[in-house]
Amino acid sequence: MTITQEQPATTQATHSGIIDCDVHPMPRSLDEIRGYMPMPWRDRYTSGGRGFFSNPIHGARLDSKPPDNGPIGSDPAFLRQQLIDMYDIAHAILLPRAFCNLHPDPDFGTAIAAAFNDWLADTWLSKYNRDGVFKGSITVAHQDPQAAAREIARWAGHPHFIQVMMDSGARAPYGQRQYYPIYAACEKYGYPLAIHPGTDGMGINSQPSPGYPTHYIEWHTCLSLAFQAHLVSLLTEGVFERFPGFRVVLVEGGVAWLPALLWRLDAEWKALRSEVPWVTKLPSFYLRDHVRLTSQPIERPADDGQLLASLEMLDAEHLLLFSSDYPHWDFDSPTHAFPKLPAALHERIFSANARAFYGLS
Picture 1 (tube, rainbow, N blue to C red):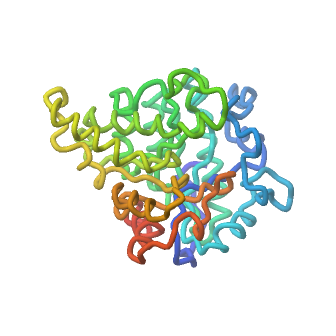
Picture 2: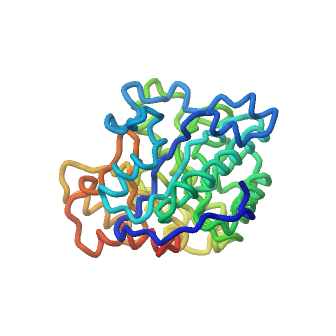
């Protein structure tokens, strides 16, 4: 399906509460995706995944298997029951897991991304979305930035796609200029770029730690390393100066590391600013205009007072967006992820920040 085709009529979402910025829908089968792929890719597609860094216990909530016994995350009615209705979710921002960023053949990666976008538009953003609760992410294969830019343009103007997404797994930090066509397209069409973990160290992508971890627990704990490297790269390469309308969402990469990283970077910039003259202000000053982080997995210490202090240090009032990561094993319930927050801060994290950033009503 392309955006020139007639879209089904939608009504305004009836839920008035939370914006959940990280929800993962799944196709009912691989054939559902293959149906959107031309040959020869259709016969070659066998899904993606994280290879040897998959959860060895269980990768999803134990109660998230749909009643029809289909793949977890594939039943929109069941997802509505467990998430939308239970927690009064006004909008769920959908991030499919195509894992297209690991393939050495950029044409194959691009074909997978396009198929997932067509599938999402035809299902979760269309026939499953009469009330407009679901908002989508345009998957792109960053192996071919020019093709990724064309894929973004293909969906520009769609009523329910509200951001672009790619994995944190990459061959180079994201501030480098080979990625600029993606950022130019995001800026042109008004889409933020969501960066989500998933293919770090897989396929053609570099592992952000020194070599490969032994266990999933080590890999999962260190997911934030790639996010830190990408953010420093974006800031020091001057991406936000070159593309002043470009915005980034760091999804599922943790948040507690942000203050210390920015303190260090600001200090380095004061001494080394002549090396990066295009960075015209303290690196930390770019965040409110250009960067947001999602909350899951929130690093919650035993002392809730320490968490509240960390939220203040990372400027959660302006930068933090709530996310649940439904239906994954480390799902953060909206009612249990945080201690009791001041009312104004709760409203900003759970609703107002995302509404403003994405232009949602």
